[in-house]
Image (tube, rainbow, N blue to C red; front, side):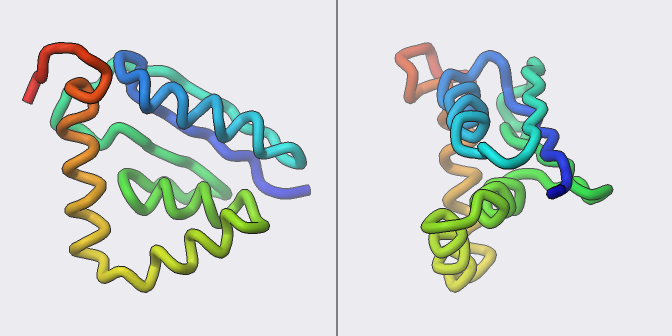
Length: 108
């Protein structure tokens, strides 16, 4: 059986919660343990633990896609071609503005 995925997301972020729920719906052949935690706006909004490894930020998102398999695995492979500094920058932009996207006052 595949290793269990443990995912921690910012409970105050609708985008983050939806990502966790999306993962639970698509990870049909493995256990997904979703934890909602209050995180400061400058923290990585996604953290993942799998098989004793802990990842955060864009690395966690890529690993989630990789673990889902199918077309999501191909998406992760394509994103890995993007230089890591650019992937990290893209993740940081979304993470730092995640409250603005849901109509709340920005807490940057």
